[in-house]
Length: 541
Image 1: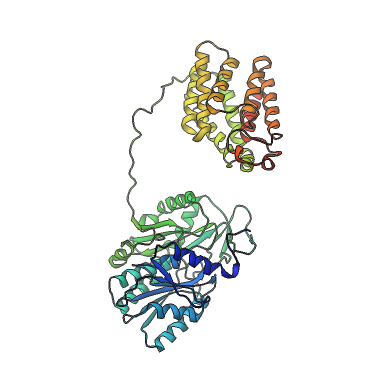
Image 2 (image 1 turned 90 degrees about the horizontal axis):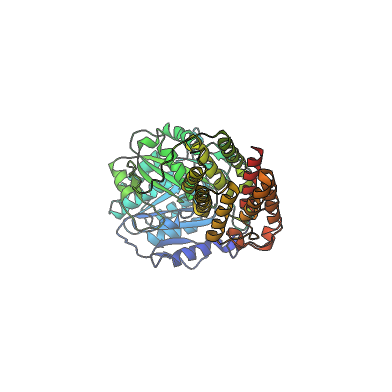
C-alpha cells in the first residue's frame, strides 16, 4: 500500500518536524540525537508539575498532539508501535522537570513500563522528584492480570494536566491521575487491520467480520464476530462496559481508531447514547480520532465515573487543536420545518394498472441497488443504486396515497416525492422530468408525448445530451420507442442504450466526465442502467 512518506526509517522524525512546524511556535522538539524524539511546550513553567507521557508512534494525535497548557508538558515518541528508549524518556523528563517534579503517565505495555520505569529511576537518582501512574483501562480480557492501556489514557492526561496547570503539588496531581486511571474502562471494535507505513497491508478479516476487544497496535481482537448494525453493536459494547463502571455520572470518550468516517462515528455515538450505559453519560468527548491505530477502521469507547474534581478537570478548556473538549449531554433541540414547504395536497385515488406498474418499477430499482452501486463505484461516487432505491422506497411508501387515477396529478405527486426523497442533482432532475410530464398531460398530451416533454426539460436544465454517458443514453431512445412500439420496444431500446454507454470512452457530463478513457472502458453508465431496469419492469408489469 502506498503512503506519503520519504523513508520508513525517518517517518517518525519527519512527522514530528511537520507537527512542530504547524504549531505556530506553540511546540518545540529536542535536537541533537535522531533517536531521541521528544515534543515539548515551547514555553514551560518550572514552578508547576510536569506531566510527561508517550509511547509508540502511530496513535496520532496521541501523544504529541496533546502537548500544551492543561495537558502534557512533553511527549516521548518511539518508532511505530514501539516504546521509546530509556534515554529518550529520560531526556523528556530532564527537559521539562523543575523543582515541582514530574508525573509520568504510562500505558500498561511491557516495553512502556520497563523503559519509562527505568528512566524514572535514573531521574530520581539525579535528584528529580518523579511519580508514575500506570493506565490499564482495557476490559477486553476481564481476567487479565495486566490489562492494556488504551484510549482511557487520555482521561488521565487531561485530569493530570489540569491539576498541574492549576499549581497542585506532585502528590495531588499523582493522586488524581491514579484515581482516573483506576476508574477508566475501554473497549474497542474494528472491521479492518491497520497498515504500517512502508509495509504491505495484512488482512485477516473477511467481509462483514469485526474484531471486538482489540488493542491499539494492530493486534487481533479477543473475539471475531459478524458485524451487527450499529445499534446492536453499541448495546453489546455498552453492556460489557456497564459491568465495569459504577454510578450514574459518567464521561464517555468516543475514539476513532483511524479511518472510520465521521458519519459512522456519529451514528455509533447516537447508538451508544441510546443504551442504558449512554443514559448515564453526563460528559461526551468526541467522536474524534484521539488515540488511533494508524488507519485502522474501528472505534473504541472509554468511560470514566465522575466526581466533582474529575468533571472540573475534563471540562476545563485547553488551547489544543487535537482535543475536542467535553460536551455536556443535553436533549436535542428540535424545531418545526418552516412554513411554505408544503406542496400540493393530492387526493388519493386507485388505479390497479398504474399501481402495479409503479410498484414493479420501485421493486426493480430496490433490487438493483447493489448492482448499480457497484457500477457507480467504478465511474462515480458509488451511490447511484442507493439514489434510485431511495426514490423508489419513498414512492412505494406513499403508493396508496398517490392520485393513481389522475395521470397529471400522479406525475406532479411523483415529482414532489422524488424531489424531497433524493438529494443532489438526481433528485432535481427526476422532479423536473415528472413535473414537465405532468404539465403536458394536463394539456391533453398522451403518455409518450408527455414523457418526451420531460426528457426535453431534463436535457435543457441538465446540460447533457445522448452520447454523454448519462441516463439520457437510455431514457431518450426508450421514450422515442414508446411512441411507436409500446413498452416492450421502449424496454429494449433502454437496454440497448445502456449497454452502448460501456463502449463510450468519454463522458460529457456528471462525475464520469472527470475520468480517463481507461476508467470508463467496458463499464455501463449506472444512471442509464437504472433507466433500463425501470423500463424493463414496466414492460413486464
